[in-house]
Amino acid sequence: MVQLNGIFIKKTLKLIFVLVVVILIFYFMYFAYAQFHKIKVRIFSPEKLQFNFEHIYSDDLKNQINDFVFNNFKTDKLSQLNPEEVCNQIKSKFDFIKNVIWDFSYHKIVKIHIIGVDPICIINDKIILTNNGYLVDFDFFKSINLKLLKSFYLNDDNLLNFTKKNIFSFIEKIPIGIWLNYQVYYLDPYNITLKKMENDSFIQSFFLVTQDNCLKYQEILRAKNIVKLINKNQSSKKNILMDTRFRDRVYVKPMLKKELELLKNMGRA
Image (cartoon, rainbow, N blue to C red; front, side, top):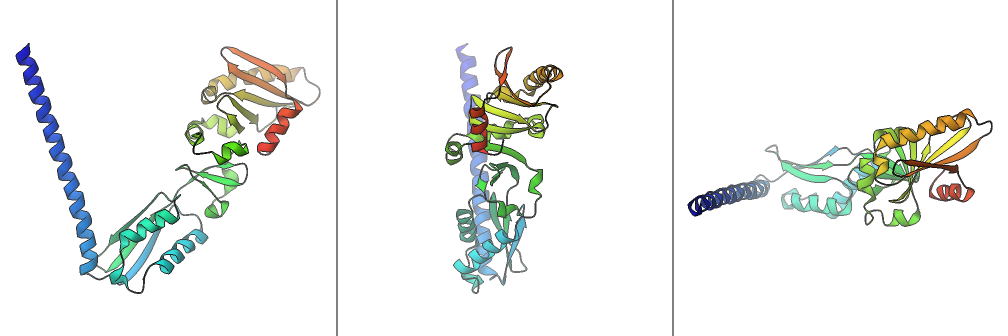
């Protein structure tokens, strides 16, 4: 038994040693490639600087990046240009951009590749949430039809502490069925209101959910069946709140005026 343990330990140590060697080889290869890239710029003095944009949906943003580079670096002396520093400064200035990388061709062109972001939804009808978790201005997505984006509403405290409260990770997980049929009003993880976009005849339905059961769309569908039953016996318009936060139960009550006002303060209700 002791001998078997000894053999196992030796094999494990050997495997760890091989993995460390492989990692070190890849590290040195990457380091050598990066250094060669820099040396190549020095040897073959670049004659032209070129920007390539990907997932950038605003000419204004492209112009801002161009102006930033030409105003802050000696682009008239490209032989002295440090492309890596240019990339780092662009990422620092426009921090919501996903990535900035550079390349140098033997045609003596330094290419700066700027990779932008895509919008996920509109927050409070006035700001865009991107797919890397940043809140940015509408102007950066001028070439996109923003009317097709989903709506999400927050109160002022959540908006100011958006990153700290990790709301982005919740938004990423919201099922497509919720996005297609509801506007989402987020107060806290245990108080999220879904407003149905299309009314059921006389009923304007709201669903009170938690962060967990909002992700289980089947539970919302079960509550919708109750709305249909109520609507059959309804002859005047009413706002109905379906509280689905309890296991195996749904509480039905009229939507209070103060509850509607709370939603209006977060966005349009």
